Image 1 (tube, rainbow, N blue to C red):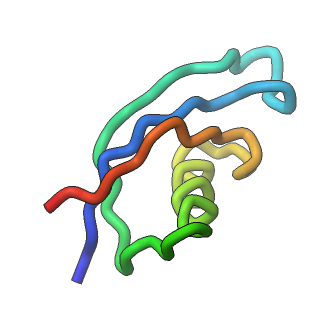
Image 2: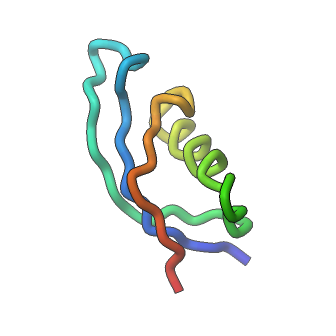
Length: 68
């Protein structure tokens, strides 16, 4: 069963190419499994990074919350 999360995050930063400045985003992300408490944002960052064709360390999660 898929789990949905509201996510507020930034892309870019120090390691981002100059052509891609830092940008702030928010939206709903659907995952196959619930995030693990404490270390789950690593999976979320990885998914977002693949979507933006970035490395996961170029994603900074500002806020996330599970949707009911």
